[in-house]
Image (cartoon, rainbow, N blue to C red; front, side, top):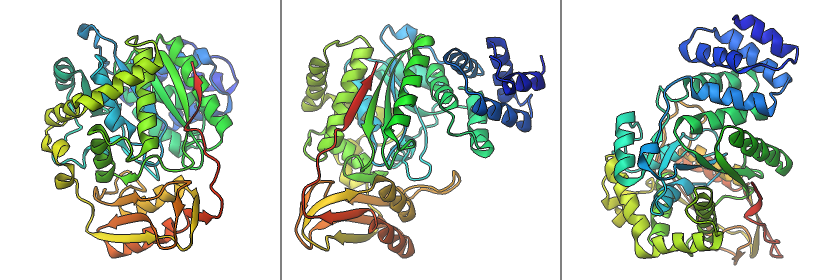
Length: 437
């Protein structure tokens, strides 16, 4: 088998078989196929999109390009959740410990932030000494002990995807739905999840801003997952405005802990999505069929302190100090410089642009423009007012934090463009617009 023949076959819009996808995936993982041929292959797939059957075959081939985790020995459902990314979307931080309380096995392999969207690993690392580079033996040991592990992609898990993911950006093939689907699901299949809840964002701060495009991606993910034997459903959720009050790393971790301590009124939208996402995870995992019963069960874990205790166990296993969960403000500090943003007029917050808020947070130091940029865990934004909130002139809209005067000034200038005040209260937007099963 030769790579050039596979490229030509796909260029001519002829379907590829499993052995050909295996050849590509193994070649990418082992460095046996040069980058220029892999890029040509990706472009052929972009111009002649993979069918559902091809997408499933390519996904499985990438998952099998390295080692795979298997949690069958735990004798309980292995369930994970994946978000397509947004601003203030730190749901995973609270979700993993919460659903683990229900008896699910939760192997949660996460990524870092890039551009205006945040990353779960960066947020976890705002806890001093929290180690996300977890060896496979340690993952198994931790899963057996507490039922949940939050870790970064290891070199041996879906290495073909790691290679092709980088090339997709360089080759101009990022927007291909089948390639996005294969990339996401190959990692989930490799991590051992057999049930998957997808949170597919739409709106100004989302990867795919148009609702129709996000729905097509959600449908592709659910169809392909089912072809691979993964129980899957997708929620289509709004990302036109930031989720919750915190944008950054330490402050998103702080928000998570305060909510798990029982402050459900701190960020009602965050709390609602947390509970609803968790309820669907319990449903697809077979633990609780009725969504309302699942939601009540999860709220109970917060009220009794079980979810916070599970978070403390996670922190301890990853090398951090569990006291963070008891005294979060002591450990999770904002950057030293603060800019208080006040309303120029009375009325209602009629626009609070998620993408501009995320980009402002990056300028403050909370994110990275390229992967090698350093993160300032204390930098970020705390929203005192949310979309639709009533304000008087001079009310505080947000507090911005940075460690550098120039960064604070630049971040504040961009944040000023992210909001608008209007006379009438804007119509409420549904947080979860549609559920794909």
